[in-house]
Image (tube, rainbow, N blue to C red):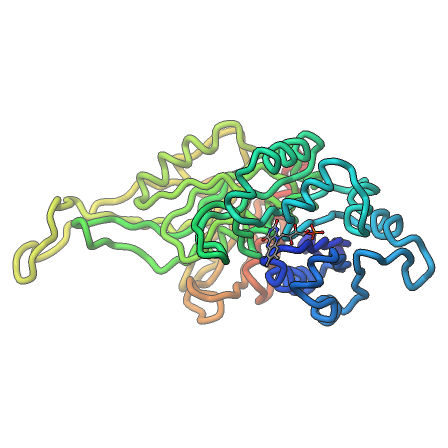
Length: 398
Ligand SMILES: Cc1cc2nc3c(=O)[nH]c(=O)nc-3n(C[C@H](O)[C@H](O)[C@H](O)COP(=O)(O)O)c2cc1C
């Protein structure tokens, strides 16, 4: 289960051009199961209407001047007491200044001043405003007080200027909220390493032997680890999805590069989850120049790649993933025992709704001396959550 389910989020929207993007944020938070109380500044209402947020969150929306709730409670006190997190997005330079100076001249800033729960601020403004020493000093003050500040993206601004100051993608903001809500989770102070994606073994500079792994399942495992408070390292091969915000990610291509990266990443870790689809073979020879049509080689000689799981041993838990297309449970049991794994997650990659490119997955978790745990068809996030719950249980016993 995601930490967003049932979480109380106060979304303080302030008056920047990116305020329209906050409606997507409110929608995605709500879809993920959060209860979102949107609070709009006076200027925000010039950019977006409260009705948008009311419809998307299916909850009352608060304006800058709201004093009392519908239940006749003092609005800033009630909202601050109920909140699990306050997210200021987009945060104007003006709002950042208000928060840094402890002003409480509208509902959102009064909530911020009354909060015990964590505060996350997502600045969005023209590059000049962002770079200004006043804004930077105010952000430094907020960070010093423990406020989590999300670095803005660089790119083209509404004015046409290029630079740093764009509100990051909704998915990034959601990941930071997840990490904030999960900061004291069951994997707090634990280090998890996840491998994800596919490998590419090049024959020449433009051709490779690879596989269609999207990286989605591994990225969801990293996200689930962060949600449980773990410091998470991701070693990511070829993939079509972005790594979650807040995860230390190292990009690799070949199996040997993946092994090197993992050998460094596992130093001091508590658990390794090997989800990557690692190629078993690579070309015996690689050519420095592109091979020409009609020329050699007539065949490709292959040599075996190192067995990554076998090579990565230590004091940490080892969880493998087995992508099987036939006799999968039988093969997997042999693998579990043969490689002395703590758990093996078996999925049938031949199915159209469980395969490499699918959005969904189903799996069986095998553990020595434990009954098999079936995870029926669900999202890859759902499978990740079930696997991480097993990791939490295993780590708890150590
Ligand atoms: C068209 C327009 C766009 C603006 N965009 C931004 C912006 O992206 N970021 C920002 O910090 N301020 C922006 N401002 C300035 C803020 O709206 C102004 O500082 C306002 O007082 C902010 O109030 P608030 O912090 O209470 O929402 C913009 C102003 C206008 C007129």
